[in-house]
Image (cartoon, rainbow over all chains, first blue to last red; front, side, top):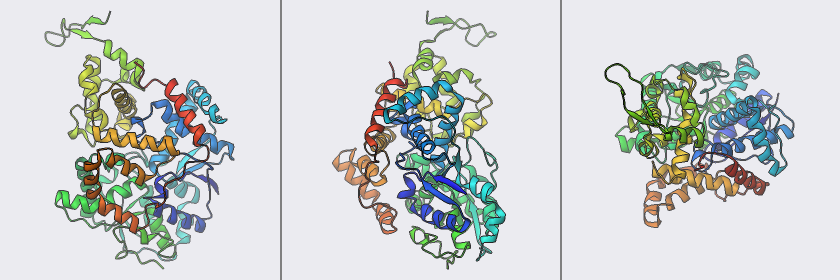
Length: 289
Length: 207
C-alpha cells in the first residue's frame, strides 16, 4: 500500500511524537509513506488573517499539484487540519472548473498545474478502510487489556465532510482502540471543539472548552485521552497545567496519539511509541516493550 | 437606488422601514464567500451549534441579519467574526448548506483589510503565522510564537514569554521543539510569486 505522506508543520515540531509513532506503526502494517517533495504549509485555520480565499486555495493546490506531478498516489494527512484544508480545496477545484483555471493561472508562476485527480485522506480512514481491523488485530502482541481510553475525535477529523465516519457519532477511532485490546469509553463531548488555532490568543475561552472535554472524558472513566490530531493533542495536553491554575481544576490526564497506543500494542519500544515525548506521562497506564 | 422599502409584514414588523442594502451588496461583491449568505433562512442552527457562541457579541445568524440590515459598522467591528475556531459544527448542520466558517473567515479578512481589528490578539498571531508561510513556505512554531509575543512590544513581549516559559521549556525538554530555525522550502521564491498573484487576483479585500 503506497501513499504520499503530507506531514505538515506540526508533525515536525509540537506533534513530532505523532510522526515517530506513525512511522513505526506503518512499518508493521506494511504502509509505504513517501513525503511530497518540497511541500508547503496548508495554511491551517488561521490563514484567513493574512491571505484572501484564493491565496489560501493556492497554498493547498500547490501541494496537490506537486503530488500529481510526483506520481499521483493518495495523500494521507495525519493532521486533521491539513486533511480538511487540502480536502476542502481539492473538492472545490474538482467541482468548479472556473476556480481550477484561476488557480492554475497562479500555479503557473512555479510551472505547476493541477488537473484534480488526487485523493486526500485522513490517516484514520486509511487505517480503518485500507489496512482494516483484522490486520491491526493480527499485529497486536501486547493487547492493552483493561486500559480505559477516551477516544477524542474533535472537529476537523471528520467535519465537515464525514467521508469515512459519521459527523455526529464517529466510531472509527473507538473500533481501533478496541482492536488493540483497550476499552473505548463513550463520552458525549468527544465531538466538541478544543479551541483549535485560537488557543494561544483566546486562552480564557479555550480553557473552558478543554476543561469540558477532559472533565467529560474523566467522568466517564477515561484514564487516557487518545486523538488523531496534533492541534487537539497540544491544546489538551501542553496547556493542562496552566488551565488547572487558571480554572482551579486538577487534571493530570495523558493525551496521546492513537498511533502511540497502537505502537505499544504492537510490542514496539517506548522510543518507537514516542512515549518519551509526552509532557504528561502515560507510563502509569501503558507499559511499552 | 440603495434605499428600498421593506414589505408590510402584518401590523408590526418592518412596515414602511427603509432598508439600506448597500452593505449587503458590498459583502456579496467583495467578501470571500459573501454571496453564500443569500441562502440563510435565519433558523439559528449555526448559533446553537457554535462552541464559542457565548463569547460572541453576535451569533453567526445575527451577523447575517445585520448584513442584510445594512449595519456595516456593527458587522465589521464585531468580535464574533474572529472567534470562529473552524470546527464546522455549523456547516454540517446548516439546512441551507451555508459554509458559515468560510463566510466568517471572509468577513474577518475583509474587516482587517478595511482597518478594523475585531480581535487584536488573533489578528497579530495570524499576521505572524502568514508571515512565516510567506517567508519560509512552512510554519516554524517557536518562531511564530516568539514573533507574536514580541509583536506586543518588548516589555509586554517579555511578560508574555515568561507566562509561557514553562510550556516552552517542556516542549524543548521533551524534544518537541526544533532548536534550529526552519529552513525555507526549495522553491519558496515561486511560492511567493504565487501568493502575490493570488492576492492581486482574488477578492477578499477589494474596495
